[in-house]
Length: 102
Image (cartoon, rainbow, N blue to C red):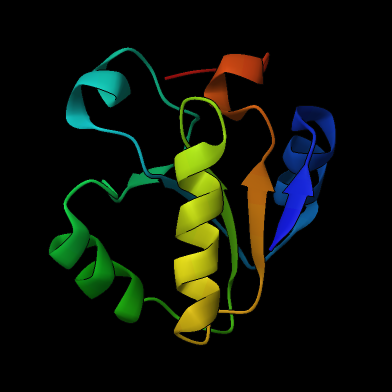
């Protein structure tokens, strides 16, 4: 897992042809806006979350975020534990994000 500040996270994610953006927040949080192109995998539903990440391609690069960076760091560690090596945590979460939302 690598923690990246929002500007570096956005730049690296945009330039990475193998990037996958994952939002680990709840449905209510996602309704408030999400980073364009993000797929939601709610970490609070642990068994569903584990099923979702086990189905992910371990050769892709995953850019993970939550509200403030804590749950996404946890998600990165869980993904690393199952063999997904390239995870990038948005430091400060979407609260620190100043890019576009959808």
